[in-house]
Image 1 (tube, one colour):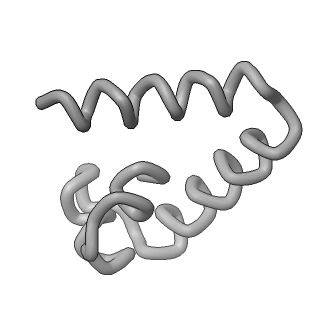
Image 2 (tube, helix red, strand yellow):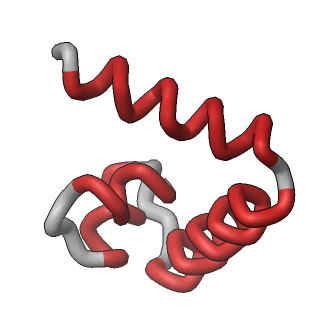
Image 3 (cartoon, rainbow, N blue to C red):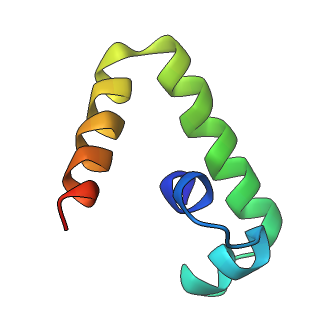
Length: 58
């Protein structure tokens, strides 16, 4: 959800629908959790960067 929010122009509602009909608040909560983890844990940051790099190569 975090990457969908970051990398697409989709609304929170649209992202939620694409993740099994989740509420927009669930998407926002998930995004905030990952954003906070990225700030605190360099391993999480590196994983996110690696995923983004893989997506660029698709």
